Length: 132
Image (cartoon, rainbow, N blue to C red; front, side, top):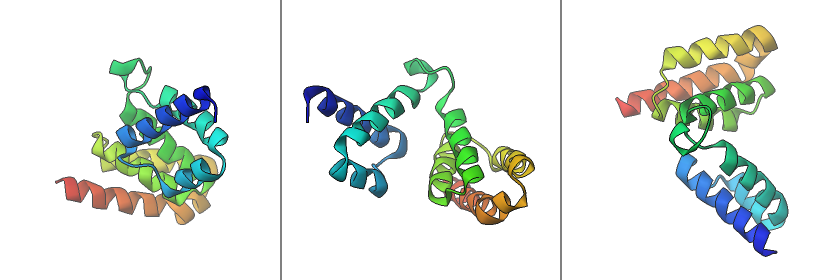
């Protein structure tokens, strides 16, 4: 790898650790087998997933909510649940998430709820209960 790729990989790894607590296995696989792709994704993610105090236009809670809703729309359960959990940990309430998920249902239809939305909401409820 080049020095630029190495720096981008490092930025991506650091951002995952900071915002998610770990690098998901699917991204570790990408890093192992397509390091340049991970570098590009990691650099883009590091630039986006910054809180307002770090120069982001939106706070991280909002960004996590947006990702949870978009992942729900496309049926990406694992990502939707992870982003919803991160948003809850950052202060999003279950009613706020539920309202957003209803917006997804309105755009994507009842299938988005049945495939992903309900599972995401139940996961967020469990996270919120753990946090007290």
